[in-house]
Image (tube, rainbow, N blue to C red; front, side):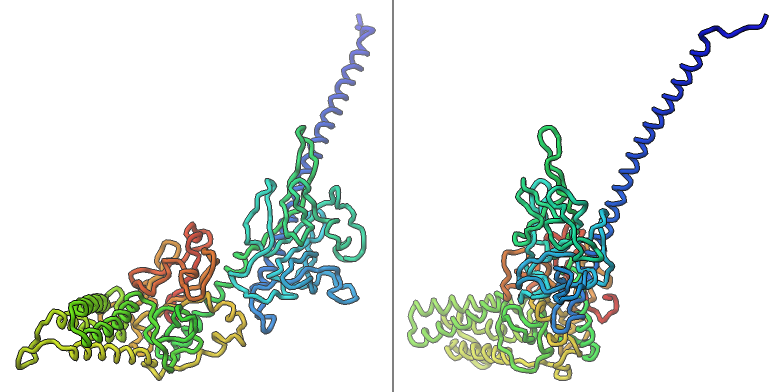
Length: 570
């Protein structure tokens, strides 16, 4: 018999089909939500990537602008940054969007749009299709200039805070590039046609955010305070305030470390160029203690002299404690000898004995010093000074001496003759001229000339120079002096530099100050202890320099370059 479907079988098929359709719809809905979520995340990631690229490109261009400022702007040093685009007119009546303008008063911070045209860039947009904004510290803007020094000691005036309200990189921020992001409550009025390329207007409050809880308004240029992007939430987790401004930060280190490296290399090149025309010899440095830029004979460490290999007389002004003590004791002995000659008493004899002993000891230490040895001119003073002190003791004790034919007592004249010999040597030292008149008294063209390179007047206090004794004027231009190696060593980031121990000189540029103040005649206000070698051995104690990434850079930020006629030091 043929079979027939039951009366309920059709409804069962219908119900099964309906469930299948509902399942398909449910799956499609979930998939759509998932895909939409992925798409939203991808879009936000693309926006963030676009913002980061634009900020990085702007930062790089601004640093390059500062690094080459003195090359492009005659008569100015490096380090200046452009003013912002304040209104799209570049100071005139015609639209000229993206150009730097005159901004405010000297020394005052300035805010506006990024001057992309001045930086030779296209208009730069963030991920929300908004053009970048820009803030520059008053001391670093180029128009009008603040008028002070442009180097590591130029103060920064901007402040950036984290979402916790704590300041980041205090006293270091010289400029900020800002991506305003999408409009949020309080800054949505971005209408206008003042900026045809970027769109919108030049009202900072329409683009940058105000954090009323931390009391930091990113549009308040007078305060110069800015806060990173974040959300505020209430106790229930609801967002009550949003800051979505993103930043590229330009610090003093970003500018001056690059400029410092450039200046150090230019100084080294000038020294090597000078030596090339001087038989491989380098000129005398100018002692730091004098506060002048006059090279002094037998000085191995100091600043770059305005005139190399000076042939004019220079006053002897020692900074070494032993030299100073020797000269003081020489004066004291003369006074004690005069008092003894006027009245021979137990008091004058004791005073003569004590001052003679003091002079003899300090002079003996100078004569015997080997690490390093004192300059020959100083030893020439110390030798008769030692004898004067010794003779004074003998005179005070009533001793006798053999004169070649008989024994005779020590006399006032014996002591005086040695004091006179020391003073004669001192006078010769004080009036010493360069022992190598064949060396030129001019630097190579363009070197250390503030009229040609205006940066030099801003940096000369921060640049120091050590020359090996074997490469000074009058030397034989090699490392060996009396059987000892006088050449210099350099330790860079924990390793000896190539050719270390054979360097003819060293250029040392002081970094950001680690002390509270800088006194121009106090070398320790500029350089760290590792690099102050005036009283140490430059061969046994190497100069030390570090990369920014090295831990040692935090305590020694001096930039040291070796000088060797471009053999290893390139």
